[in-house]
Length: 484
View (tube, rainbow, N blue to C red):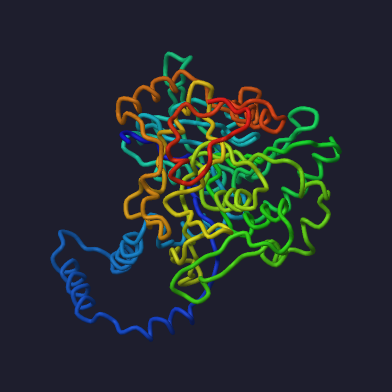
C-alpha cells in the first residue's frame, strides 16, 4: 500500500507489541559464546574502526558511547523487535509490564506528521488538564513534533514524576493554538474493562497484557455475572491490543478453554525455546498465591463468544485469538491482525541493562505460524458502516523492514486485502479527518454491534473490502444469514 499509519502507542508505555519472556541467563550466555569460535578478522576490523574514530573524528567521543551504540546497532539490525535496552529503556519496559509508568496519560497515534490524541486516560494529568480526543500536538516544549517518530515523541513526553512539559495543540474548534502545561505523574493503566451492554450480553475489553491482567479479568468476569447471572453472550475485545506478557495471554485463554489444553507453542534455536504452554495455573500464575481463575463461574467455559480483532491486535492478543479460533470456542470477527508472532526474551546484561532478543516463533494450537500473517477473522467486519477507515492503513508486521518471515507459509505476507494504493489511502485518510475518534464499547461502536448481532443470530454486515485473503487462508465464507 501507499501511505500507512503507525500503530497506536501509549504515552509512557511505548509499543510493547510482543509477548515477552523474562530471563537472566548470564552463565548460559557465557557458555554458549564459549562454544562458538569468535570471528577474529571481523573483530579486528571493529577494533580498527573504533581506533579510527577515537583518533580521527572531528571531536572526542566517549568510549562508552561508541561501544553502546555498536551493541545497539548490532542487535537492532536483526529484526524490528530486537533491541539493546539501556538503563532508561530497561526501566520503562519493566514498568510497562506492571501496568504503571510516569507520563501524561494519553493514548496517541500519528497523523500528518503530528501526534494525534486518540484518548486521554481517565483521571490522568492530561485528562485533568483538558486534553481532548482528536487534539493534534504540534510542539513538545519548544521542539516541533513534525519530523519526529512516534517513539521519539513518546520518549519526550515521558520523564520524572512532578516534572512539567508544555504541549502546543491544534484543536478543530479553536482558531489559535492551545498551549497547555502538564505535570508528569505515575499513571496506572487499566488493562481490563467490562460492562453489561444490554440484558444478557457483556463486553470484556483487554487493552494490553500486563502482570495483573489475569487477576483483573477474573474480577471483572465475576462482577459481570453478579450483575447479570443469566448472560447469553460475551464479546472479548482485543482491538488495538499490542500484546504484553505471555502469562497474561495464557491466563485469558485458559479462562474460556478446557483445562490442560495447549494454548500456544514456540520454536527456536535453543532447546528451551522449543516449548508448549498449557491452560494450567503454573503457566499463567506462577508467582500468584492460588489460582485467579479457580472461582470463575462455570458458565464462562460455555458462553457463546465473539472475539473482536483488528490490525492493531498483536502478539499476545493474537495468541488468544488463535487459540480460541483453533478450538472453535469463539467466532473471531474484525480484520486481519498485525502478525507479530515472534518471542522476545529479555537477557539481562547488568543490573540496569539488557538485550531484548527474538528467540523463537509462536504457533497456534493447530501449528499455524502467526508471524508476518496474523489471525484471519472468521467474519471480516469493517470498523464502521462506511468501511475500515484508518485501520486499513496501519502498518502490519509484514510491512516492517527486516521482519522475520513466516516459516510455515512463505506467501503469508501477501495475504492481505488489495486496495488502489495511494489514491485509496488518501481518500480514506481525508474521510477519517472528519470523523470523531472511535470509543470502543460505546453505542457508536459498529463492530461491537455486529458482534452482538452474531451472538443473537441476526445478520452481520460483512466487510466491503474484497476478502480473497480468507480463501488463501483456507477459511470458508459464512453460510448463515450474514450479509455481504
